Length: 191
Ligand code: AMP
Image (cartoon, rainbow, N blue to C red; front, side, top):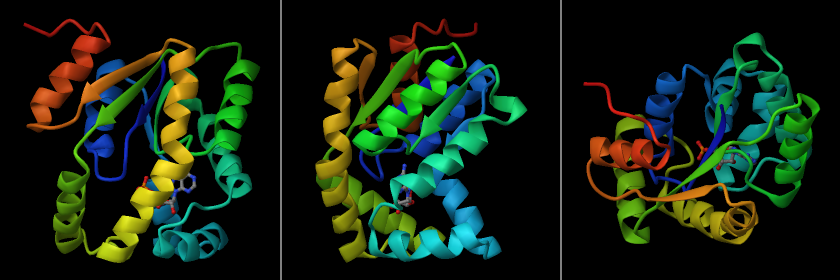
């Protein structure tokens, strides 16, 4: 199973990604999490990524693509993966197509969470207080939304043309959203 979860920053992708990945017994691969781990370890990748992340901008495609390629080459991703936060640009879509095609597999589905913009900003401001992320100030949050709308939202159309997008209402309780996603993916609930 090869899946992508998409949606604006703060839509709840990370939370839902874990449930989906657990169900399908595949790793949830979050590029944001990998970047953050590198930042806190002070690796060269982290040093490079940090200046973009702190400004709410995207890390260059070349850097991001190389990182994802290495990650999905790891043995735990051989039977599939769920990508959270990747692809985010047209160039990343093309790169991912190449990576998947190379392994002789295909992309099964794109789960797209739709949420209310104002709700998102308030969720992110709340998260900023709890987690203290450097990229969760109000200005940076607004910038991240802008970059998402310009660079990433158009990609949904690309995947829609392939007929693999499941648009899911991301508003409401976490377990309600999970149920909607499982329903769309034809997951039969355990009794
Ligand atoms: P996230 O946790 O997914 O919101 O990502 C946090 C930050 O990491 C983003 O604002 C970007 O600076 C960077 N980032 C994560 N994924 C990507 C990506 N696919 N392409 C470029 N930058 C990314």
